[in-house]
Length: 214
Image 1 (cartoon, rainbow, N blue to C red):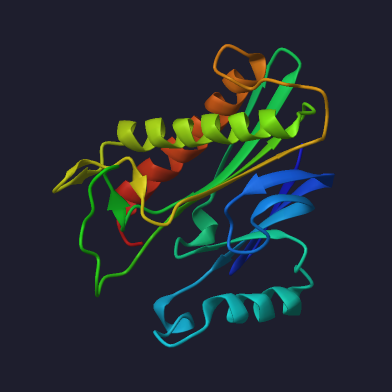
Image 2: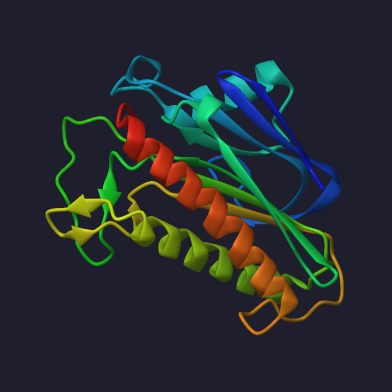
């Protein structure tokens, strides 16, 4: 599976090979081919109000030689990343997450965060099994479901109810191209996705709650 390298403010998840990645990440969103998923930790001073964030991030990535990577921005201290592995039958899943809940939300409701610091949840998942593009969409939906379940089980209370995520979450799923047509909850692939992502996000959320600094 992939390898994780920490070089603060950067966190890199090397997938080991070029593969299809689906996400809504800041850099290279949608269906792309990549061999790395990376995080850039930021603070308020890095992102002043009038900054063109995408242009700034492009320069940061260029300076690291990482323009081809799928890339997240996070206010979470990347030293507190969490990861989890799951093996179900022939399917291996490796999830890496950074979890901050300082801008937590309950789905269908909104909290006014103007003038306050923001956190985020960023999850990268590497699958060993080859999937079709349609199955990769289903895999992403299972990863998001696992993220939500983990955040709810962490019991972070808001005025609007128990948080289900944050307002700036992002998930990226990577898998080889292949013939696997399904990744739902009844499949080995879906079970492995759910187990790995759930544990990585739950561990990260509980760690954040225990510190409550970011």
